[in-house]
Length: 256
Ligand SMILES: C[S@@+](CC[C@H](N)C(=O)[O-])C[C@H]1O[C@@H](n2cnc3c(N)ncnc32)[C@H](O)[C@@H]1O
Image (cartoon, rainbow, N blue to C red; front, side, top):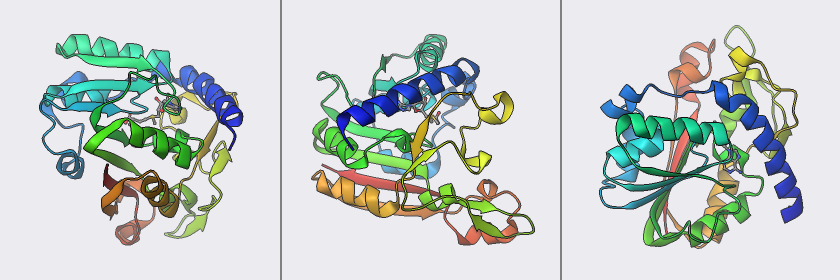
């Protein structure tokens, strides 16, 4: 994809997200205080972040970034939506924590957004990168030698499977197709659209297959240390016990 096309998509996506962002508040600050924002697998993947420089991409309202700060990290967090960042800053103030929240496109980070021991992206963040190879190349350059990239995401198979009543699945997207305008299955859209409705604005997200993510990370010169896939009980509502037999999320750890 050309840089120009990617920039146009990002601009559309920024308008879309900013229409949703004032209404998205994330977790209550108590959840950050109690440390319940990251799950057990994510905690194991990021390890001890005390004194380390952490970058969170597509940080939204900053709950995970604030959790890293609470764990003792020096945190920078970037997002496209100014209202999300404003909510993050207000939460930081309420918690007495410091996070450098920056309005940035994760495809074009400022030169000084660099030198990180850990880069983290999660839960509906990576699908907004219009070009997975360009994204991985840029991010790898911003990680210190020996530092890590942790991706904790919706599984691309989950992105394209829809529960079609009485415990059956139908294919509602293209695992290999990557770009999609809108969502055939409203359950795959940002959660806030279920209460707020979908803003009448163009937006484009991407289904990055497991193969495309691993290949992009390897081509960027990183070493994949682990790739775990998980079933999640509440992510295929209506499927019944079979939801334990298919992946809903994945967690990839790579080292530069
Ligand atoms: C579903 S949220 C991320 C979820 C976050 N991990 C959480 O749990 O709240 C997606 C975020 O990606 C941001 N975003 C979309 N495209 C982006 C881009 N190119 N650069 C930075 N942030 C982006 C949106 O503004 C939105 O806040």
